[in-house]
Image (cartoon, rainbow, N blue to C red):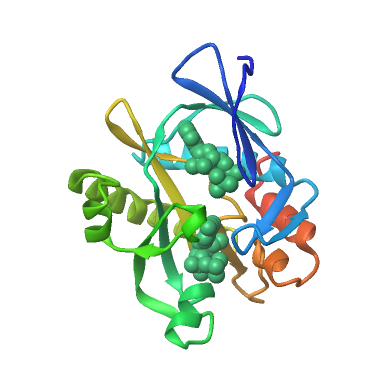
Length: 236
Ligand code: ADP
Ligand code: UDP
């Protein structure tokens, strides 16, 4: 599989076309951004970790019945994926209070919910990804009701699988963001699942093992990404 043209360069990945109109190659960068691009930096080794971690978890999710865009990992940083039409919704699941939720609700971080929450943001950088609900999404025709229902079902299923898996690594899955796309009429999980897009805390020490170390200048950012990768045991 060969890269043809750069289709899109985002904040964390480049996306290339291939000879096959149904296949793209995503290339993960070490670039890190936060606060809608206002804070910029580099996390050395992040691209390879996020690529390999995403593929590893997507395979587990496929095995549990969640369809994904994954075709084949090509090398450390690059993966062939199904070209989907991204549904412009950021789907956020939370198991514990943290980040914008904690701020909005005037709560401390790390309070466990009796059941997980789900929320949508409209994926639109110019608007700063505003919080919306199902009815906004329907009114704006971002997706059909059937699609939103499938996305909701899959998102909670992703949470079940990931929560259980991370628990086995002594990691608490605090919250995460996922994206879905349309592939020949079917909803499939796309984009990535990584320390860029999940909050992951060590279960015992509550040490943050995710992008909050970069967002909040906590130091040891590379070490945190490496630690998650080490616990995944991908290299055997
Ligand atoms: P951003 O656009 O937020 O800066 P990235 O740097 O991660 O994000 O860029 C990757 C882009 O590719 C995102 O806009 C994402 O929605 C999109 N994308 C992810 N998976 C696929 C796919 N399988 N097909 C088409 N687009 C995808
Ligand atoms: N998140 C993400 N991309 C975004 C916004 C949020 O990957 O554009 C992830 C973030 O890493 C966290 C979860 O979604 O795991 C919830 O983020 P929150 O709404 O608390 O926003 P933040 O505090 O990151 O601004």
